Image (cartoon, rainbow, N blue to C red; front, side, top):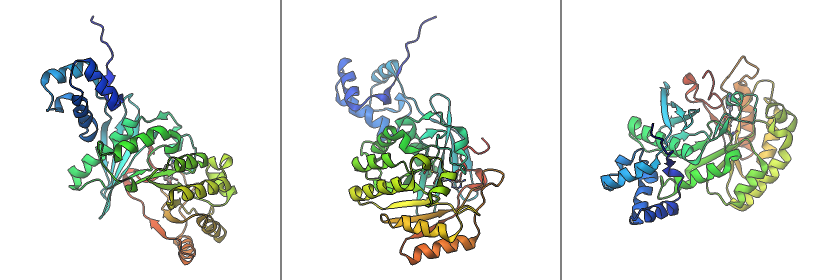
Length: 348
Ligand code: SAH
């Protein structure tokens, strides 16, 4: 049997490295630029798509490299138009990504980790435990796949990206940032940073790091409670990363970036539906300019958590709005196919 030499994934090479490779092969360095454009800007999945390269050159590339690409395995469409993808990664692990259409936007909701280490009590992904981080390419490819679906099924461009799929993006910081750089680059997908939102459980030291890095995308924090005792009881991260520290990090964020933060907040019956909680949220909202998305709870189990009554939601809404905090109630999308927030991994 002939021993096969394992080929390198060409997308792991930086443009400079690709140039060096071409020179080594006695080829013109501008070929590297062409290949790089095919790989990122045009999202080519095979060397045969690279029609401005000679067949000989394509064969040479095939001898040395592969193009690893995620596989969108199964696709479910919700009655409201939401599409949920099961995405198979290079090593066979599976994550999920979601396309969310509205009248004005098409949003891609992408995953950053296989599973999650944060153990938020109300979230289905938490039950999978963290397996590994996604690579830059695996994050990028999810966006490409949804961009293609937007065009194919809706005849519209992808407009927004939210890192609200599986995992905690700030615990996979380097790969998330590198993917965003590629997504926003002219050599990549050329999307605007202000259309991208990274959602975090609120890891203070990483928020400070992002501020220092002067990132240009939006920040959302999954707050869910503005009283430490309650927040710790539903989100274990709060034990080591309490609200005071989170608030300090957010102050730093705003001082550096001048960007508002969005708080994601679910109101649950008997957990945070009292006026005391609403007042605590209002106080927290005053730390830096912010807005609030009151998100509908998507049940994941037997009912330990239940969506609060409309009266409680209205109480929150009135108090916040009266005090100048923009507040929106976010209805769930894709619930019938378990594609809604916190439902990823449910039943799969
Ligand atoms: N780890 C990041 C990214 C996940 S985003 C973060 O925590 O922000 C997923 C969003 O859905 C978060 O705001 C999360 O708190 C929320 N969520 C989790 N489970 C939910 C559920 N069952 N119903 C509604 N929202 C949920």
